[in-house]
Length: 237
Image 1 (tube, one colour):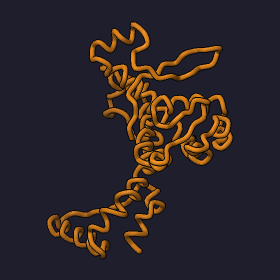
Image 2 (tube, one colour):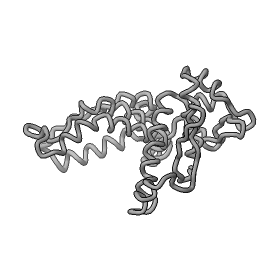
Image 3 (tube, helix red, strand yellow):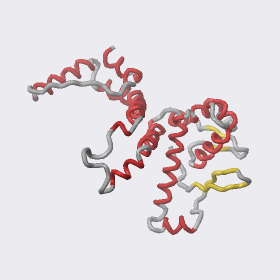
Image 4 (cartoon, one colour):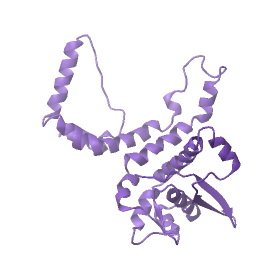
């Protein structure tokens, strides 16, 4: 999906925030900063904000709500999207404006919004959107991680942070893997292994243990969404 790589500028007009696009940096400070690596640091920051906004929209099902109540022929107002998603109109309007400024959705001259048909599948459940959900997971440990970096940080008994501190990492990863399974693994990769996939797996396991006869192996799937993805039924139907 193409997205315009332009900074977002937040202006305050009559106490109402509005997001607009600009092809130039909006103040002297940003120009001085960007002159170090022309445009790159500022653009990375803009992309980071946009990425966090995409993750928020994915969590709140805002893309799905917009897709349901709008089309190119009948764009939706923020009020319609807010009602469908069960969110506050004021916040939904700002989120829609950010998505439009990032060129992910389309806004009309009368400030109505819609998703182009060719982008609906990606924005309502594709890997490209789910990938952004990892950002809040990693940023949740920002303060702890900054302490670990320091020489006097908490590294006496263990190296770094434990998985338990990334509270919803595996839930997010499972959702991402489910999309991968449905889109690529089940329809493409597994059929390429042959009609008797179970026998193929057993053959691989036999060869492995023949090469390493003293090995004791215990395997399990820790991502609980494997059955829902359809992979389990495909393997053992």
